[in-house]
Length: 441
Image (cartoon, rainbow, N blue to C red):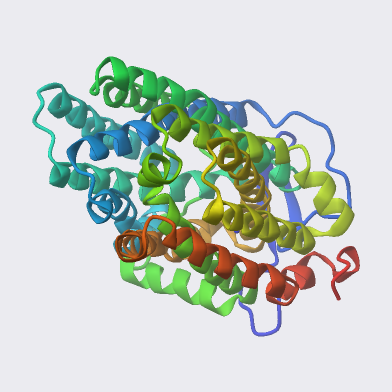
C-alpha cells in the first residue's frame, strides 16, 4: 500500500488485463521515472469510478449524520468514541478472513453482496431513527455491521482494480479513485447529510441505503477478470499464507507498522472531533461539516501533484512531505480556538492524506501477486484499520482525563517524531523505487 527476490517463491511475472489486452510485466516495478501514457483507463474502470462516487456520496451523508445522531443521544466523549470503535472493530477481528474470502470467490459478487448487506443495515437504522427508537447501543450494532461489510467490499475492490487497468496506470487510477471518493464523501455527502439530518434525522441513512443499491448494480456489470482460481486449500491455510507473505515482505511490513501508529493517534483525535468542534471551537454543525470539506479539498488538491512529485523527488520523499503536513496541522489544532484556522489546518491534513494514500496503495498493489492481493490487503488493513478502535478508545479516555485538547497534543508530538525519522523509516520504499530519485540517501 514481490519481485523474485532471494529466498522468495513468488513468480516475477504475472498476466495483467488492461485496455490493450493481456500483457506481462515484472512484478514489483514501481513506475516512478517514466511518464504514464495518456490513454483511457477503460469502461470497466469507469464503472468502478462511478460506483465509488455514488457509494461515497452516501457514506459522506452517513459520516456527518452518525456523530450528530450520537451527540443527540449523549455528550459523553467515551460513549461517542464508541461509535468509531464499533465501526472499526471488524477490521481487527474479521479482516484476515475477509481477505481470504476475497481470494477464493468471485470478487465482483463479493462486492455486490457486501453492498446489499450494508444497504439492509443502514436502511434498518433509518427506520429506527424515523420511529424515534434510536439508542447509543443500537448505533454500535449498526456500526459494527457496516464495518463487516466494509472489510469484505474494500478487500475485493482493491484486489480487482489491478486487473482492470494496465500496471503503469495504477498511480493514475488510484489517484482518480481517491479524489473521487474524497470529493463525494467529503464535498458532496457531508453538507447533504447535515441538511437532510436537520430536515429529518432518518433521511441521510435512508439515502445512504439507496446509494448502496446503485453501487452494487454497477459492480455487478464488471467483467469477469478477477483471476481467482478454484480454492484447493482450507480457508485458514489461505489466511496464514497471506499473513506470512505480508510479514516477510520488508516494504509491506514497514508500511503496515507506520500506518498502524499513524491511525492510532489520528483517530484518537477524530473520535472526539464533534466535541472538539462544540467545546474547543465553540461552533456547531456548520463548522463540523466545514472541517470535512476542508480535508477533502486538501486531498483533492494533491491528486494533480502526486504523480509529478513522485517522478521528481521520489515516492519516499513525497511520503515524508505527507508526514510533515500532518504534523504541522495537528500541532496547530492543539492550540487554536479559531474555527477558520482549524478549517485551514484540516485542509493541510487532507493534503497529507492524499499523498500518502495514493502512493502506499499503489506500492502495495505493485509488489503483491494477484492471487494474494485480497489476503495481503486484509493483513495490511487489519493492522491499519484494526488499530482504530484502540486509538478511538485512547482518544475518548484522554479527552475525559486531560480535556478535549489532550488527544491533539499527543498526536502532534507523535507525528513530529515520525516526520523527523521519515527518511530512515522509508528506506524500503527507496530501495524499491530507486534511491537515485530521492534526495535522502
